[in-house]
Amino acid sequence: MPKGRREVPPTAGLALVPRDFVAAGASLERGVAAFVEQTWAQVECSGTAALVVALATLKRLSGRRSVVVPAYTCPLVALAVIRCGLRPVLCDTRPGHFDLCPRALAAACGEDTLAVLVTHLGGRVADFTMASAIARDAGAAVIEDAAQSLGARWRGRPVGGLGDIGVYSLGVGKGLTVYSGGVLVAQDAALRPELRKTAAEMAPYRLDWELRRMVELAGYGLLYRPRGLWLAYGLPLRRKLRAGKLIEAAGDDCCAEIPLHRVGAWRKRIGANALKRLPGFLAAGSARAAPRRSRLEAIDGVSVLGDTEGDAGVWPFLQVLLPTQQARDEALRRLWPAGLGVGRLFIHALADYAYLEPHLDGSGIPNARDFAARMLTVTNSEWLDEDDFEQVCRALEESIH
Ligand SMILES: Cc1ncc(COP(=O)(O)O)c(C=O)c1O
Image 1 (cartoon, rainbow, N blue to C red):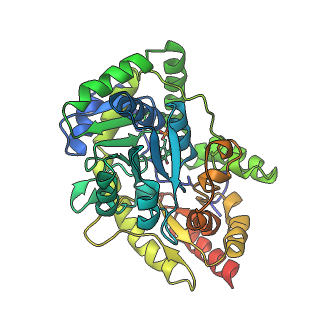
Image 2 (image 1 turned 30 degrees about the horizontal axis):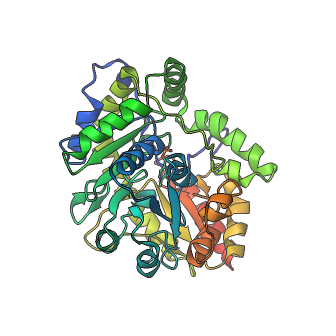
């Protein structure tokens, strides 16, 4: 247990330093574009907003109306599809994984498929070759959802830059954050003015939203450290857990009203300044994750999601699969309230959220449901020290045996 009133965050986010707030900043668009080896990037007010802009643009350019979404992903993804007046089609995942099942994907794609969302979840690299081949066969666009994977690489190339459109999140808890933000990249230069046009139409400057996000980003700068997190994150989390509000505790209580507005210059400058530290931060995270992954996998019955040889993801947290839901739930009973950065990513497969159920066909997604039932996350934060990590491992061992 962290000593005293301290809390380890569930994901390794890049903390801000005072200099980020005062230094003259470069352009966030140019900085992120260079970081992911692109020549163009567009900043939006969230990863969800970036998805909305991407989908609304594709919709304007095509008569197709279905979007294939992994059955285990962030509920905001399905809400973005619905917000655009498009039809989300769930695709089951591979067994014991979040990534799309090839057979289910082939069955989900058809003449009406506008896009397939290939999702690099939690820093892990999805099977892009398989998914893009099936999407292309169906004449669908490929949107890479790299919301949680800025900096990950597929065969040496940054994820997000492989498909037609790539989306990153700069939300709180991701590596790089402007409290709430997102980034779009597009391979086809002709698509970029279309994306700009959509954003100009859908996302005006909103002083009320920007002021709120400025205060929130300043709060993040002050509080994103163990003592501040205890106050701002840990106390409300434990209150929700005591009340049995798991969806709220995981942050899955998403609202169908998706804010759409421009990101102001002050927040962008802070993001651009922090971005300079991102490569070193991600490299340190990878070095920390490797021995932790080995230690966790040494526990009988535990597996940890990794990447295919040749791919190199990033490590905000480790996705840990336990042998049974019972063992997973017992581990969470001990660890989720403990301030050690253990928790759940998304509570359900998408069709099992009450607010999404009316919009989704939840048949044929057993693997996504099984993944949701057996997975927990262990933070890769630098603030989880070796004693804390051992405590996590021992609790997992005891929960299984
Ligand atoms: C896979 C995935 N896609 C999209 C989003 C939406 O990003 P944002 O929270 O920045 O709106 C998230 C958020 O966590 C996510 O995990």
